[in-house]
Image (cartoon, rainbow, N blue to C red; front, side, top):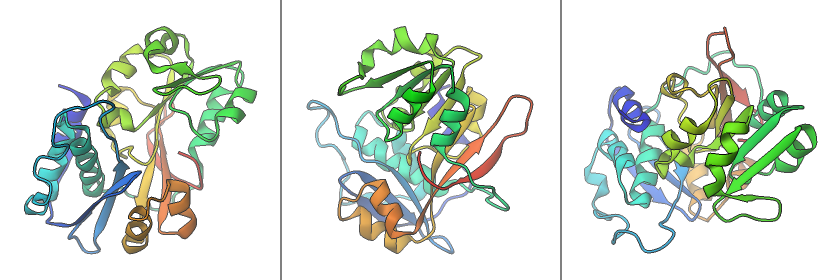
Length: 261
């Protein structure tokens, strides 16, 4: 059973779908709960061609419930999987009572200082990690200066003491393969707004999760619909970045993040 199977099996409850918005960078699904709950995921598209049309039932998705939409996370049509991830994040319930503040960058710097760090995806804090780490590899599908091609993961990840994986690895169905390349003793962080804040990921072997929770659905949808990045959405308000950390020998607990992820 894949991690996606376990994640979907862990979802409780259901709700009608109030709105679906597929933006340039982010996809949002809003459920008719009280108050309405909004889940986010990266908007991914096939690199070359891929099954056509990208969303088979586009225009009729509102006929499905939130749980039925979440099942689209299994789809080989990557845009459908993006919608499924957003729906799954909307269905997740996270207890945020009394949470201290921390962010994904702080976790990577704390764990990676003087150690070998591998990061899948080029995040804004890369240069600060490179300064703190003994060695820092960045794996990218479209590598820039200093990055490595993503297909070198099998050579890089087994060497890393700390690994930061992007939450989009669940959408493009590479998560289990990437996690399987990590050493059992490596500290693994799954980050980015697509990341589901679910203990299922801890059971899979992840040590920390950094994702998002939407507080102001209307404001976030307004930004997503205009092609906003996460930093732009966050500046306008209505979105918090949360990090849930499980250290060795400690019980996992969610932590509020100020920035990063």
